[in-house]
Image (tube, rainbow, N blue to C red; front, side):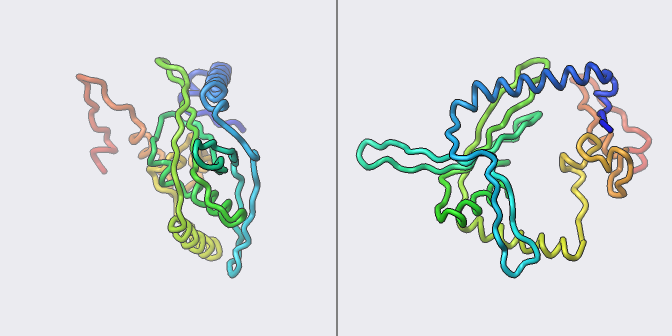
Length: 224
């Protein structure tokens, strides 16, 4: 069944649907005018698999946009540029660090490097920021690079992931992770996750007091 957040439940199904449609149109327009004209794709939704010898699992993924184009130079021959792009929708912009630290792009770049024998010049994340009551949706892009040292770290992380899967020793999500919430996790929403405290989540997401106001501690806050 469709699970609505508390905010969506409060506005009703029809208004929640209309709002979702308006947000989708706004994000699509932002992508159409601000991002799409810059994209020079070689392939879209490129699926890849890397056979990992000595491991119980292989690596696999799908690159949203694999770019390749010739960049003209005045003195030398044109240079072939290869880049990886991905699109994300966000409620707020998380900035450059999100892209620099992303394991996803490290594995994508490593796959392209191992399959084609060349390092991509850059990985790019095109962020589509959802509209608010005070502004329209907009797009902003961040570029980052990967090196062979990043690939060594990724291999070690892959080895550890294989070990965890085989042992079934899964670590619960950090309560501060965005997906550890009723809005994004069905287990948290239906109360079946033993590692999720819905009362704590409500306190964490409680809005900040406005200027001149202050929130009194609740009984649970006082007893914690």
